[in-house]
Length: 415
Image (cartoon, rainbow, N blue to C red; front, side, top):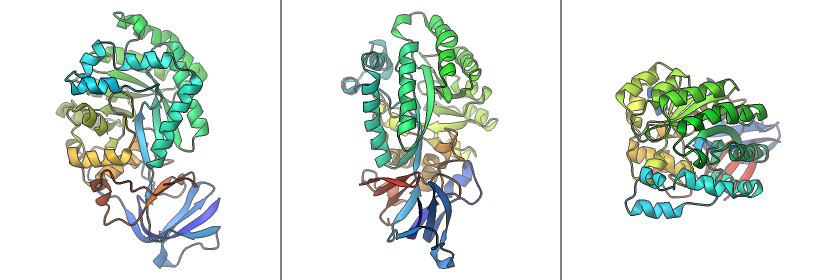
């Protein structure tokens, strides 16, 4: 398909420098053109510019007018667990009654609850449930997503999850990356034998995931009550042998050493960071790991938010992701994450939008493909009616502003 969109009142997230991410003060810039055009050819961005420059390639393909709409690069969500079975609203009520995340886990809830449900669910049904969530996030403006396993907790069920993720990747129009998270918790068959469970993952599960080429990344829940830095290092090294790049759950529940192990092993990202320290910030300055905040988790669990303002002020990049999962964040709404980052973590709207587009793409290794409006990138974008300002997008935090969603140059939803 070859087409030109004219009369775009504002074209946001433009990039002529092939940036792979923005850091520090650069994040306050979310560049845009007024009265713009966009050329899409064969699913990719072929060009863009100002209508005032009289350079619109009207001879190329179909031409249609945006009639003054605003156009944004699609959100990129670099941390989700959206392949799961059923729901866990009973635990939601437990939290209201005062039980902590850790107390619910000790009583057999939490991740183990989801593992039990997943084990009893067929692969086809698991795919059907997940695709409902995929369509939901696409309709809200997300065009790239990382999906983790981690509700299997044994080799057979982890492989089942990863096959479902591969099927989503093959059938959904958005960009999908897959992460093996067998070290999300200790499986029921290994309760009280965490070391044996880690050995099983290293010697049995990871090699099988690698042989079947089911995962781009390997992740570990390195935190208090879950996996230690030493166990995390062993798991990351085992995954690296099969080509899986590290990503880390770290510093959510305590100062657990997650950032240190992430930087040491050149992890693509370290995510959560609600218990992040000044030392962690200094460590991140020495590496290339992208700190990633999950504000929806803090909102839903009523826990501290990651120190995003300090991260940006230290000159680091920052990514935002949803953490979409059944227990601690049953939402994949990236626009709401942008609002939370502004309201609770003191990000400026431009900073939050960079964190939710280009930088989140970088945190899942696809910022050369998506995350901004740049020539050669996939034509993944959404459109809104003309807004009072960019600031209005996070300000109107529940208003459904996304009106049209295009992925790979093709419209997938007109809401």
